[in-house]
Length: 341
Length: 221
Image (cartoon, rainbow over all chains, first blue to last red; front, side, top):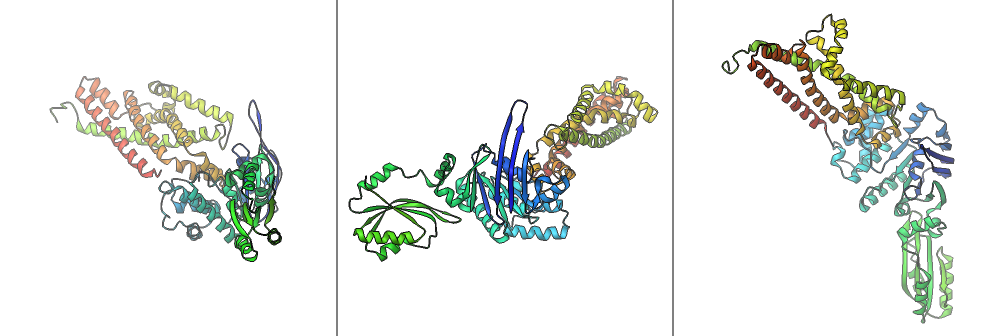
């Protein structure tokens, strides 16, 4: 369990002060993948550095599993940092060391004996899928492989938390997906709490359960990914949701549907956390004497299930359609009938 | 050969080369030590550094700049009392060492500082995030990551040092400069000057060659 209380960071320069992080409050459950999203300049990068005090907070508290990080002296902070893994956008590997030696570095820092180090490094190489690259230098690796080294290095001392600072922002989409899959895998295998910051909504959509949206050093919106996805309140959140969902269907499109729907009724199905294996549309089609025609839709998979909306044209007796509606309402799918005019 | 260099005493020439080599190597060792110290001090005390300190930075930078500003010939003359105090004489190859080291260490110190600044700040941040002590960061990150640049810097310094030993030779420090000046130039035996020049050039090539090989071997980028 990680608690952030009233955390602030003010940068002072000769002629101005910048409030990078402004009284943030957060609580993150043990074992979850928590995402913080924001545009550059929102303060998310500063925020993640405040957690392990790479930046000293101006005020506020950071508590990781009952240990108040913000109160530790230098020596204790160093020791507790060994239990907080961190990976970076630009990997930050030591280029003078091989893959093995890079992964062994945090173990050297923690004073682990050479034999134990070797055993642990082999284990980690296996875990992150770098077998065969042990003796390569970072310069000989691709971006995705470098980030795998970064992840192995961050996990070396069995941390309680993994901080991910834009860990996939320098990677191409395919590599991003493989790194995200690795993070989910690690999260499940090791029960590791992961905090990640990003400016890419699909990263949040793919692996996070809960999300906080940052703007101007503040959290403007937070909650479960599904909730924030389905009911974005702040303009900045709406923009992020558009990144993955496209622009929301506007009134005009709905009008268009209605014009073409003389023969039946237009239904708008809203999936929020619906599991995909509930084949709701085919069930409706089988159980009731209605013809269903998909007009438009967009459904995305998130860690907590599907999210999206689907426009259907239902043709049949009004009575039957009402029965079908009642059936759909019994599931977790929301449905509404788009009325004429 | 005897026709080309009628006045060269080959035994003397070899001895002089040995002296130049000796002065360069010992002075280089001293320069390496002091230069790394100065470079680290400059880098670590700079704004945003691990030991950020305005005063230490100002004092170190001033010392480095002052000794870099003094021409080497003048530095030797200024150091004569100091050398006399240390060795009882200001002549001979050992007496040249303090001037050689003091003359080249600040130069190398600046090169060390430049090499350290080239290191990606992110790597230092990563080491901090792993809970590394400052000493670990200095030895295992800063010096290790900048090693190729430190070696090429040392090569440049070594070659400057070979030049300095020749200048020191003119006030009787021994070595090829001494031999060229007193036996060659002073007696108008220019074949000796020429022979010494060839040997100095060969020595420079040798240092550059070795330095390049080591730097390339270390560079894994």
